[in-house]
Image (cartoon, rainbow, N blue to C red):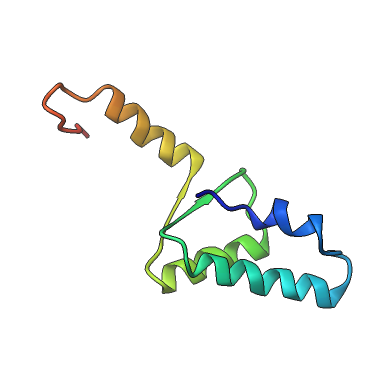
Amino acid sequence: MPVCPNLHFPQFLNMKTPQERKAALEMAQNLLRRCRVVVVCGKALTDTMMCEIMLAQRLHITSTTLDGIMVIHNRKENAPATGEVSG
């Protein structure tokens, strides 16, 4: 199930309040620990995103981008009928 803490948590937490922002960051890291894949969205990386990517690396969780998923998806669509993926 896709999860996006950056969109979800501000619905009920005030990100301008230091205590609530800290709580949101901790909850996001706890969610990340339960993930199998981290998909980075957008072209710019924030410091928070970099910390999450580094945490994923330490936990051996695959990180990719939406562009990376599309490359894989397009290769599968163009794969030979044998099911092999070229590339």
